[in-house]
Image (cartoon, rainbow, N blue to C red; front, top):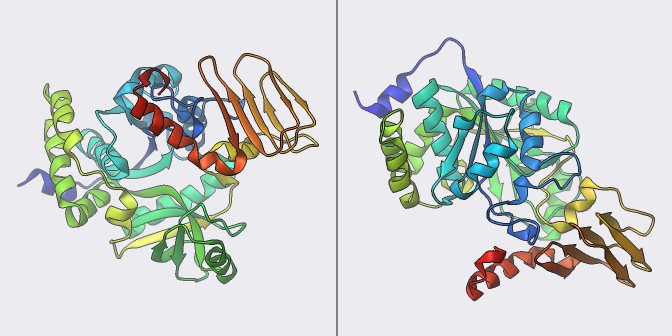
Length: 368
């Protein structure tokens, strides 16, 4: 019997729930705060805790902390272990030798769970989202976990739109009175007119990038829709719990096709469901979203650290140490760190990643 068949024939009376936090991103739109060794998920942007620790604490309402995994880049593993000490087991921080997108990340975690712990429900979330209502988030996840187990299907969490957002992908679903809805189609980020139509129709949810399914079920989908990646994952799985595990991962992982799980599997599978919810979700993808984490003053300014603002409005100022003074600015982002300063129109914050690209071209690796 092939190893793949062992995966799919595994039967367990009690299906355990495992949390998987995807934390391999570089957070380039948060430069100069976010760097390769200390990316956005290892920053305390809310003033409460590191983003990854907030993600762990949220998931602890759905599964035991001992059953939470973090998948991160190998350059971040040591800092991740230190940052999450006491929350996540060190051997549950999985090291990616190179960034290969969400399919590889999720497949690696699924193989780890099936090979070492048996089958189980995976609850997969990003490490850098903000969620205001944790109790409602936990309630929605409970519905999704039940659906994933009973339907043996792919389940995602959709966010009920509160405005015509053009920065998010959308999920079209079949309307019904149920909590779990059949997904009809995934839509790319729309223009404003299209987004307004989506919201008015009541047939769309924002794509949150959160997934719930059995580890064995997603591996079957890899076999069906991404057979090349599945073959690579099986090579890694066969080496797990052996002395060669680390060497095989180092050799095979960088060769895995780089493709998102949305494109590679979700958009192809006929058996996908969505659980829509509204729990104060925001992906906090760039500096203009800091207003989600901090309250603005009477002039619309958000000031973090040692700041003086004179005749400035609608600005975001972040000082990591030195006094930061602004005069007569409007709609500007200013971020100070010990070795770099960013000054940016708030409407151009998506282009911050271009600074990182330029630094790479210029060979200024010490600033990456």
